[in-house]
Image (spheres, one colour):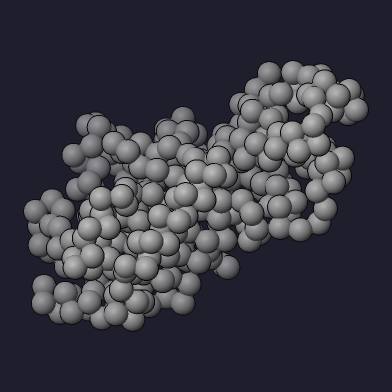
Length: 284
C-alpha cells in the first residue's frame, strides 16, 4: 500500500535514483527484491515514489548498488531521514499537495534559483502584495484566500532560518514597475522589501533589464531547488496557471539549469541590480 505520507517529492526523488542505479547494473526488480526479502510490488512502489523507505533499508540498497559515501548518497539519505517541518505538516488537507511539496523542498534546500518575469517571487512578497495576487486567483472564499496568503508568507521563514539556503532570484525589470492591485503604495513597500532582502549575504538578487527583454520569450517562471547536502539532487518546479509542476528527470533539469544560466548571463550584476532597485525606490 502507498505510505500516504505527504509531501511525496522526496519519495519520488529517492525512487528515481534507485531505479537508475538498478538499471545501471542491469538488474530486474525481481532479482533485487529477492535479495532483500521484499516483494516485487514493494520495490516497484518505492521506485515509483509511492512508498516510503526506511533510512536503514535505503542504506542497504545503496550499498548493494555500490553507491559509496559522497554527495548523491548523502542527499538520498537526508531525504529519507528528514521530515517536513511541523508548520508544513499542520497544513496537510488545507493546502495542495504540490504546495506542501514545494515548501518541504525549500526547507531542505542548499540553493534556490528562481526566475520570475512578471511578479515578485513568493519568498520576497510582502503581505499586501500577496493578498492582491491571491484575490484574482481561484481562491474565492475569504477563508481560503487567508489560508493561501498565510502559507505563502510562512514559506519565507526559510530565508531567516539558521544556515539558510543560498537564494538567487532573477526578476524582469518590469516587475519593479507592475502595480499589483493598482495601488502604488503597495509597489513602493514591495520595492523597499526587495532592497532590504537583497542586502542579505545569502541572497543574490538579479534584475533582467528591459534592454534584454528578448530573453523573456524562453524564460517562463520556474524554480531550481538543489537539495541538502549540496550534491547531485536538483528539482525543477514550473509554475503554470497558478499550479506547480515538478520536473525530476535529470536531463530536463539540466536543460532548465542551462536556461537559467542564459538568463543570468543577460541579467545585471548583483550590485547593479541593487542600484537599480534603490533608484526606483527613491523615485516612488
